[in-house]
Length: 118
Image 1 (cartoon, one colour):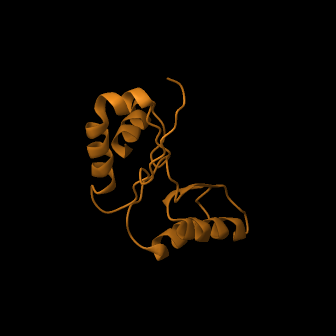
Image 2 (cartoon, one colour; image 1 turned 90 degrees about the vertical axis):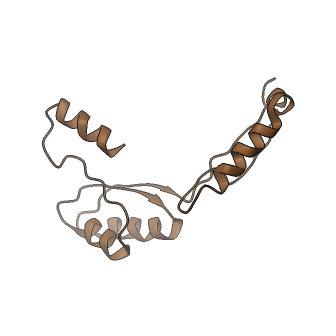
C-alpha cells in the first residue's frame, strides 16, 4: 500500500516527505515520532493500549495534534442463509484460515451470523 501511495505522490508532483510509513520498532520509536515538533498528525493501527498511549502524547504536546487510530477493532462478518446453504464448508475453511494465518493483527477474529436480507 505504501508503494502505491508513493507512486501516486510522485505522479501528482507532491513534495517528498508528504507521506511516511514506519512499521515495527518499539514504543520508544512511536513516542519520539509523536512528540517531534514537525509531526502534525498521527495515524496508528494496533492495540488499544498502544494507541491510547500515543493519543495521550498527541494531546499533551505544547501544540496538540490530531490522532487517527484503528485500535483493537473487530470487523463483523455476516453470512447469509443462502451462502451457508450453498457453501458452508468453504466459508468455514476460509474463516478458519483467516484466524490462523500467522502472527499480527487480524480483524476477522469474530464470527457473527446475521439473517440480514435473503
